[in-house]
Image 1 (cartoon, rainbow, N blue to C red):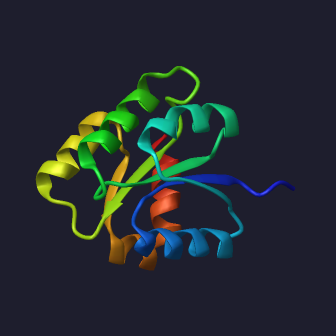
Image 2: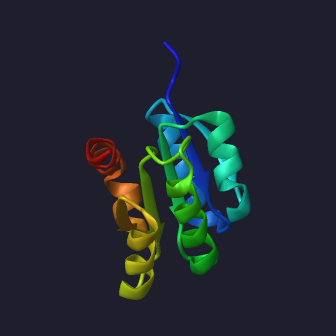
Amino acid sequence: MTEPLALVLYERLMPGSSLVNRLQDRKFRVQTISDADLLVPSAEQTKPMLVLADLESNPAKVCDAIGRLRQNAGTAHIPVIGFGTEPSEGVADQARKAGANLIANEAAILGHLEQLIDQALDIR
C-alpha cells in the first residue's frame, strides 16, 4: 500500500522540520516547498492527501496561495491546515477566508497532529 502524501509549505526551519518528522513517523510521504507560489502547481502534480501551510512566514502570500488552491478544480478538495507560533486572529481569519480548514498553533500541530489530520480529512 502506498503511503499518503502530505505537502508542507514552510520557510521557518522550526517547526517545519519537526512537522515533517512527525508526519513521516505517522507513515506519510512528505514533500516540502518553501515558496507559496509553488503550492498549486506542486499540489496539481503530486496530488497530496493533505496540505499543511506555515502562515507566519508571509501570511498574505500564503493565504493567497491557499485561495488559489481552492479556486483550482484539481486541488479544491485537498484539506489545508494552517499553522503558526500563535496565529493572530487577523491572520487566522484571512486563512479561513482563503479556504484553510483548520488553524493551529505550533504546540497543537506538533502535539496533536494525528487528531488535527483526522479532523481536517473529516471536514472535506
